[in-house]
Length: 109
Image (cartoon, rainbow, N blue to C red; front, side, top):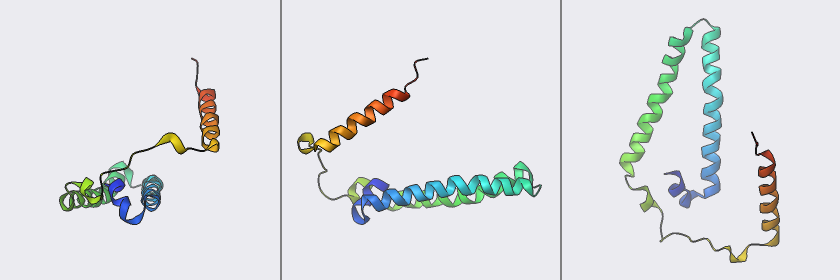
């Protein structure tokens, strides 16, 4: 859904928002659980508290699915095709360097 919604506000903004929310959740959830455990709340209390944002997000996702059952219709046009014939020399150097770096991290075990 996010990729189709990106047409109206920009792909960069959608990606940034998605990453910010992902990182916020990945940080706040464990910190909240650690706080509850520190206050002697126990795992049952911690998971019970984490159930609140789960219910909220589940309802939000269900509402988005009901409001936009076919998200591909949000995007206008037939789509984009990628043409590799106008890529610059800098792109190919960057691609080669990234490939060599990735090959260097490959483990031979």
